[in-house]
Image 1 (cartoon, rainbow, N blue to C red):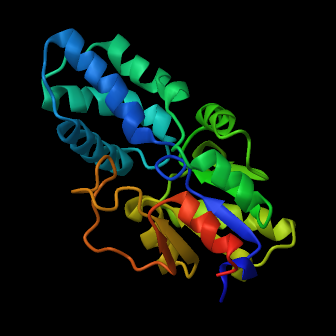
Image 2 (tube, rainbow, N blue to C red):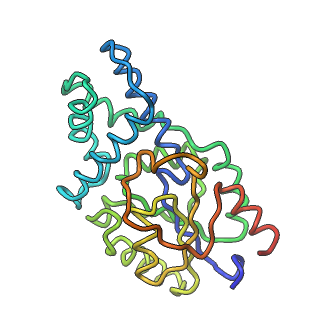
Length: 238
């Protein structure tokens, strides 16, 4: 089945289109410098991944921005940073400054010529409004954890999105789910029978960065290291 045989691309946003690791590092390294603490980028990202995994299990119904204050406090304890309430809240408020990946805006414009594009994100409505602006508003529909009441990898997020798409006349076979995270997206989408496209943003780098680890790597239907590669494949009719 060719990529262009699909009609809908559903997108994880944070990590796939938005460079959340850069956003996290910019904030945490600023806090570290203010506290006179020297930290490696790897230590910060791994601390974030562990804190997110803990918070996902503790509060699986919260959008991730609401998890960020308790995550900051856990990270601060591990990394030897001050655990102030203001710093924890400002961590969440750094979201509007998180950048898009360099290829995201142009690639999404190219993909929109071929597909109905849907954001399917663990963000709340507030965070997604900022991400959509940074991405130059590429989406035809928006699904957030705030709307659903659950976070990926819970299957209810996928079911909610399918319901919205069915009202637009799209069937299950029309959908390709595009994501960076094995933890939040690719593994559960494969279990649910979705066709998947893994954008491996950390290809060639050690570890999983700020994304929680999984026991195994789910094999996607398509595998690229960037969104530009996906757009190129679509334009080539692959």
